[in-house]
Length: 435
Image 1 (cartoon, one colour):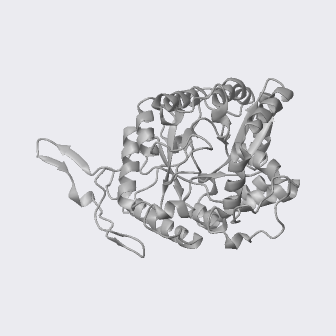
Image 2 (cartoon, helix red, strand yellow; image 1 turned 180 degrees about the vertical axis):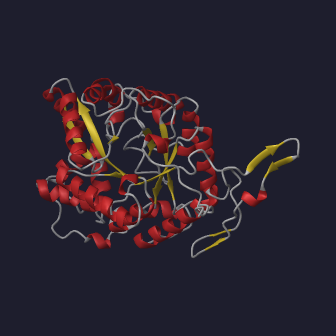
Image 3 (cartoon, rainbow, N blue to C red; image 1 turned 120 degrees about the vertical axis):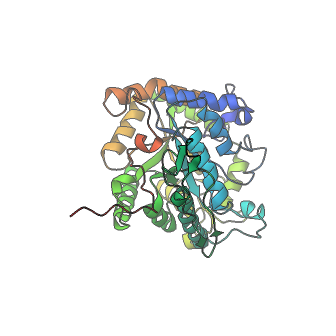
């Protein structure tokens, strides 16, 4: 998230307002994370210009391009790119992710999004965003096609027999010949099957449609949860759905986001949090909140609570799960719009926690050991300083408690790092057992 996950991070003296288009900045972040033996790094993305230019550094480097560059600057860390099923074609996107997986030696992951918002839709010739259910129906077919494409080469399709003059075996190529409501894809992928078989499949929607999709396809799920109880309920629900879908619930990793504001003392951490909140421009926050809640401009008052007559979740075609989280947060804690914007400024609904390294480690340990998380998406409010502080001060505590690795060990694919098997090729059937 360029200069940090807090929307005002770019205004701090330490921040570079041009970092979002500087490859050196991202290389530095990747190398700091690798020094901390993180499993992976994750790039958010969307096919539209977010917000307005006044708010924060806008525009983003295309993530697959950026991660290909980062693959050459790192050795172990996974590389997860966000890409939309609503505004891409399966063939091109499957080829790009297979290429990243090959270039990185098996470290690619795909954060699958359906992309809410009319702004993105209008960039692709549509008058409005497709309905929520339709976006997920398209996404399901998109994934089915992508999986066929990644499996269209058997692992041993390349023969490379120089003496016989045979480079490959055409019998080991399986064109998808797919015909469906959204896509028609005839031929095999023009990239061999990649080291992981296909990239780690990641998903972030927590609506009913999103959870059903995750249970069917996802191998890691990013989620925004505000309380331990809510996180435990989401975790148990998703694991149960995954099992009912016929999959091993251990093969889907639940990763809540956490925005750690660190300080040597709790008072210093809270002072750092207040400094960031003091740099929020509230007009931007109000406009963004009205858009999320489906309200007209001018509907919210800064020093009042949310209106009692908000639209129901079913009326929201955009980010439904985030809508529900924000409304419940505001109602539960009786926040004014100003206070709510302050809470959302750092994590946009993810858990924001100001404290000492020990307190942050305690929160992580509690959620991990009490059935709320398999791991965490660490979202530093300011980059690179917040990531550097987490690696220097929190990671050693987690290591000392036996909760986190001290070193990477032998090179692994991202799937292996997540404790997941390499998927079998769907076109191959196991040989019958001998009598």
